[in-house]
Amino acid sequence: MKPADSAAIQQVKERLAKAESERKTWQASANQEKHLEACSMVDALALELELLEGSEKLMAEYGIVFNGRHYQHRGHRYHRLSDAVSHARLQRPPQAEPPSAAERTQMGAHAITFQDGAYCLGDYRYGRLCDAMDYASPTFAR
Image 1: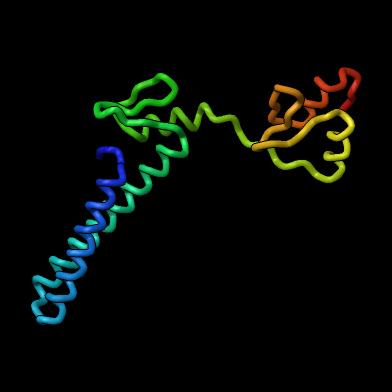
Image 2: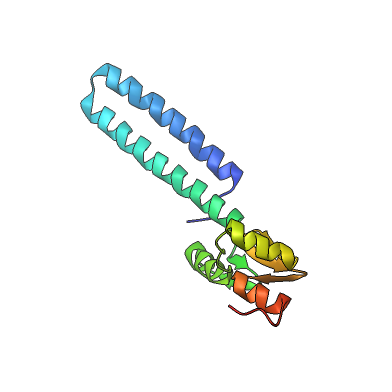
């Protein structure tokens, strides 16, 4: 499947609206065979739209681009979007749990902040508060 773009999504939405109209027309005419065909077309187009919108969302979330031949993420090229997404997920650091009130008190004493799922000390980011504390105060004992 090709990557999603606004034009492709709009085109599928237009085809879906037309198919839904045809389905209603065939239902009103009591032609069961044509009505069932139209129902199948509506279902297929709805699924295609869902996949396109999902692809667009994943590409935006992970910073993946499609150049007409392949997907790119951080200098790597992929033939399939699923491979690019898998690699992008591996590259993303895990999100740290937000600190408790007691931990926030400790953090304040050492100028440690919590931003975007990481503990920050100066220009450095840590996944665990204890690591930030170790660097903030070498005498900090866990």
